[in-house]
Amino acid sequence: MAGIRDGDQSMATLLYDRLFPVVDHTVYRVFGRRESDHDDLIQSAFEQIVITLSRRSFARACSLRTWASTVTSHVALNALRSRRRERRVFDRTVDVRSDLGMATGDPERDVVARATIDRVRGELTAMRPDRAETVFLHDVLGHDLAEIALTTGVSIAAAQSRLVRGRRELHERLSKSALGDRP
Amino acid sequence: MTRDSVRAALDSWRAQGVPVDEARRERLRDSTVDQIREAMRTATAARRRRSWLTGALLAALIGVGTAIAVVGAASALDWRGRTAASTPTLRGEVFVRGGDAEAEVRRGNQRLGLEGEVLTLEAGDTVRAGPSAVVELGLPNSGQGTLDRHSELVVTRAFHSEQHFVLRHGGLAVSIPPDSPHRSLVVTTPQADVSVVGTVFVVRVLDEEATTVTEVVVERGRVRVMPRQGSELWLEAGDHWRSDRMGDSPEALPAEDGATTSGAAPSPEATKGMGGGSAAMANGRAHAARQAAMAASTLAEQNRIYRAALDARNSGDDAQAVSLLDTLIARFPSSPLRQEAEVERFRALARIGKTTEATRAARRYLSAYDMGFARDEAEMLALPSAQQNPPPPP
Image (cartoon, rainbow over all chains, first blue to last red):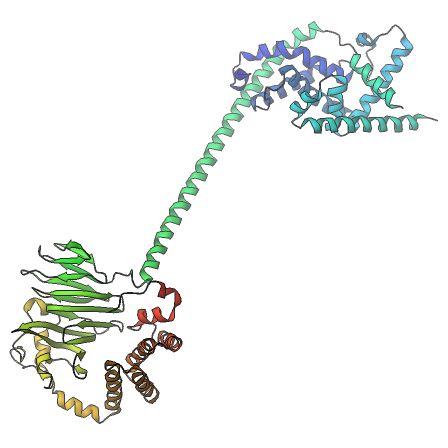
C-alpha cells in the first residue's frame, strides 16, 4: 500500500491479482449476473481503489479486501441506481446459466427466489444510498458493523442506525410494491 | 411482504454463488493493470500538486503573517514613540553636546561623558562644562544654549514647551528664535529667576569675593527677571542687570565697545552665533523713558496688578494673589499678561488646596492656550491620568 501511495508502478499487477476476485465478486453480487459493462465496472472500481489509497483514505483499520469490496459496492450500486433511472435494469435478459450458485434443483422455486432478489435489488437502488449500501454490505456481502463503520467513515452506532433504518425502509418499500402488484 | 420474507430474500441473495471466470480475469489483466498504473500516475501528480499548493499557501500565509507582524510591531513602536513623546516626563527635547573630555552630565550616580557625544537631557541631570571648552545645548524649536567654561547647570524641567534650568555658577547664553511657538524658559540663579520668551540673553553667576552675583545681559527680545528680593522687572534688548545693584535701574549698554557696565561681558564663545549681539547691545534704550510711556497706558496698570499678585504669591498669600489675578483677567481680558496670569492663578489655586477650581482653571488655560508654555503643568492638573506620573517640581 505504501508503494501504491508513492506511485510505484510495479504494484499495479500485484494489486490486480490480489483484489480482482473481491471486485469481480462484489460487482456480480450487486447485479446478480455479469452484465455487458461488467468489465468497465471492474476497471472503475480499481481506479477508485487506487485513488482512495493514494489519498490515504484507507486507514488500515480493516483489511484491504474489505476496503476494496466497500469501494466496489459503492461503484456498482451507483451504476445500478443509474440504470434504474434509465428504466433498463429490469428489462435486461437474465443469464440463467450464470446463476449456478442459486440453483436448488427446483426451477420454479429458483425463479421465484430470483424474482424476489431482483425486487429487493430494485428497491435498494431507490433507497437513500447510505442506507442501501449499509444493508448490502451487511446483509448481502456479510461484513460486520465495525468494518462497515470503518470503511464508510461513520461510527458503529451510525452504521447500525443506517442498517436498521435501511431494513425498515426496504420492508416498507417491498410491502408497498407487493400491494401495488395485487389486482 | 413480511420482515421474514425480506430477510429470507436477503439471505438468498447472500447465498447466491458467484461463478469464477478466470478467462475474464486474464483478459482484463493487461488493460486493467494499465489503467491502475495510469490512475496511480494521476493520483501521484494530483497529490504533488496538492502538496505544492499547500506549501505555497502556507508560505503565503507565513509571509502575510510576517508582514502583519512587522507592520504591527512597527505600529506598536511608533505608537510607543508617540506615547512617549506625549508624556512630559519622557519627552527628551533638550540635547547637550560637548567637545571637551572634562564636560560631563551627571545623572544620578552615573557620569555620562560628552566628548563628541549628543545626549538627551532629562530632569535632574547636571551639566558641567570643563575648563577648556564650552558645552552646547540644543533647545526645542531651533533654540540654542551655550554653557560657558567652568559652568554648572542643573536641568529641572526639560519639556517641549517649558525648560527650567538652575545655573549654579558660570554663564549660560540662550538664543530662542522670536518666531518660535510661545513657551517658557526659566533660568534660576541664587539671586533670581530669569524668564525668557523669544530672545537672546546671557545670564551669569559670578563669584565675587565671598558671594555670588547674577548678571543678565539681554541681546534681543524681552527677559523677565524675578529677583529673590525685590519686585520683578522686564529687561529689553540692550539692558544689563546685576543682582548686586538691585536699587539701580537696568542699565543700557554702551554703544561702541559692547562691554557691559559691570565689566562682565559675555565671552566670545557664549555670544557666538547669536545674531550680532554686540551691535544689538549697542542699541540700548533708556529704561526710564519706557517706564514713563507704559505708565501712560493701561499696560502700566496691568503690570502693577500683576506685580502685586506676584508679591502676594511670594509672601505666601496665595488667596490674595488669586484675587488680584482675577481682577487683572476681568479688567484686561486682552492683556499680554493674560496667559501668565492664568498660569499663576491655577498654580495659586492648587497651592491653597482649591483643587476643583484649580482643575477648572487649568482646563480653561488649556482650551485658550493649547500650545501655552505651561501646557504640561496644566495637563498635570487637568488630566487625572497625567497625575499618575507627575514631573519633578522645578
